[in-house]
Image (cartoon, rainbow, N blue to C red; front, side, top):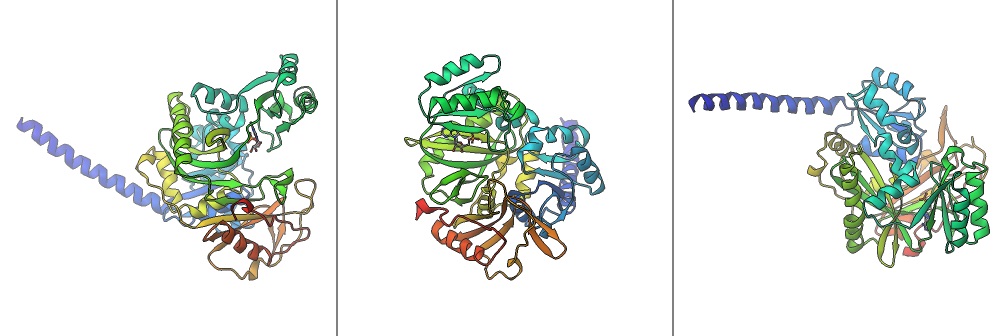
Length: 457
Ligand code: AMP
């Protein structure tokens, strides 16, 4: 008995030392946390803006970044999908944490690459298998079916059962939704109001390989009529935290008209997302998704973007994405009060359960300025003026998307050029502030929607 007590005391002493070492490690990490952020858009500028506010962020590198991210860290001219070049950069700069902005590197296995080549580095994002939630519509539909997660009814077809697919479409109620299985840069969804149009789109995808391999399989699903919103979650594979929600505006024209874009603006919080809706979304969709990933041993330490639609007051899943949205990040990050890097470390360590999230009470809106001609053809390289003399207060933030610094000048370098986020007493007030800032910015062909949040006025 006495011997056991001595052993116990020795063990407690060792434990105490271990605890001190653990604390020391935490302390050191706090001062040497070098982060590499992959991506180049407004989402990455917003993530950079948020991460540099963390006490845990020592140095930030962005690959490849834009003129805006360069204000917060060092842009490295490496593509987000060039993993071999990233490895060199990580070793040279003692990177501890890699945060993945866009979907392409995730679907191409960036997590798996680091896990094998640089296992000492924490990566925020799922392994390629889990990234199929976004990378394969058929995978995500089957996953939802297995876990009884509400979504539109569907069937999938390839070249092998093309004729069966045609017969399926011919009998389908209208409108009918066709989705290329793989990543198609946001262009792989066709909503047809006639069978002829749907059959032509089906043939274009499968026979004419409109999106290459991405459309060798096509998901055909029921059209859901309702209002959309997106909920954003961080998961460590076992637990999750909701970090925000938003509604985006995809169409180029005011009143939601014209072609689809990557996103012309966004608002948060969304007035129809009340506690009842959120409770349904959590219990019927978010929890079963995270539990499903865990039950199937799918390695997932990162963001899940739930694209939801509210039909007759019930939430259904339209899509999953395996990363944050753009421009949703530009309203979600400003409203999230937490230290984002601390949340990332909890994701990596599997201790997300111990974290508590908090949000700014104010509304946030972002209004995106795009190049003339976007989402069709547009020119790049126009000087952006006004950025250095903006009359605005801390209620507004300019996030760069398609911009590039050339000597002292910032020029346009993409379709979506920049976005102005503002806090406001309500959505209308926030949008008004963003527009007041945009009126001071100019580039050739600049266009933005003046009606973001119009239905909430
Ligand atoms: P996805 O890439 O699956 O998110 O689809 C892009 C957009 O198409 C969504 O944001 C919706 O606006 C629309 N959409 C996709 N699936 C459906 C559906 N089953 N019913 C109605 N609209 C849909």
